[in-house]
Image 1 (tube, helix red, strand yellow):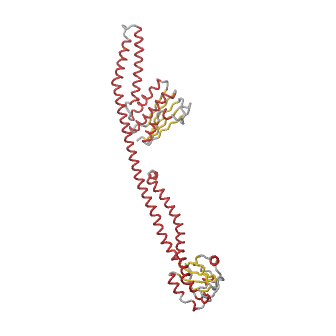
Image 2: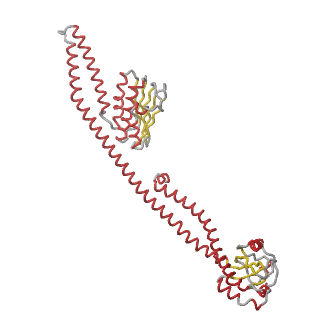
Image 3: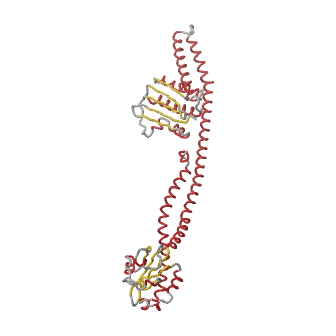
Length: 427
């Protein structure tokens, strides 16, 4: 069943395309997840930068840095209005002192900055990391940091130099944003690929149908040509048999009768007997030619007799020919006719060109196939020669056999004879 499916070009294409699409989906999803995560973080980074520009920088005065309550103004409310999903805000000195925090209990305390925070404080830019619930600063806070992300950037105060601004965001919000980006990416990326694959499958199906239709038309034309050739062969064989063969046979009988007439002089009788023998040999050759042009019966039951008639001229060439036919009793007439045509070409080549002393024609059948072998012990030839196929006239036979799904193989070597082997369906 699977082998039958894989023989269909469209099914094979869809299977390969499915594997490719699945591989692309896995690879692109991984890349897209990283990109979407970065985009989600980037949105929060932009919010953090907005907070520093619009909220903190205008308020960075000595009183805020010193932690005086009157300097805080309404930073908490402003942070919520601008940041939206900001959970917590911190403002650090370079030595780790917490100058300001929405968790007022932490203001004025000193904690160790993380390596990422120190790097941003020294070099500038923006960094982020997942909040660690076990860090001292987060353990000291009354606000839980589970599922939060810290995004921090450097700000400057004229009086106090570099400060680190830090905002906490919910990881769920970033994940939600990532999924939104991913859903759009998957639709915009995978949907066109799937559509293109389906379109290609439809086009392939149409092309396959056209190829099959052309193949069926070619087969029909070939069958018509074969049938026309058979009809012409039958007409020529019938005309020769009813005309020339009968005339030569009558002439041979007449000459033979004259040769036996006592009234004919001895010298004339000798000439007449020689002429009678020549006529009989010519008649025998002509009848063999008629069998080659069109055998009397190409059905399974008549295959052995047809092959024996086909190999009869080999005796005149000094070749010992044998015919073996087994198991073709219920084979299709078309398959039997093809066996005879290939055997005809192979026997003709062996008789004319091989210089063989023996020639064996073997036909055997299995439940599904018919196997023909024509083997001679002649001079053979080099199959790699440029004109080997043309010389032995099997190129047309090879194409004919291939058109019905069969195989034709010619094996030979100089001085080692030739073997022609054909395998074709018996149906």
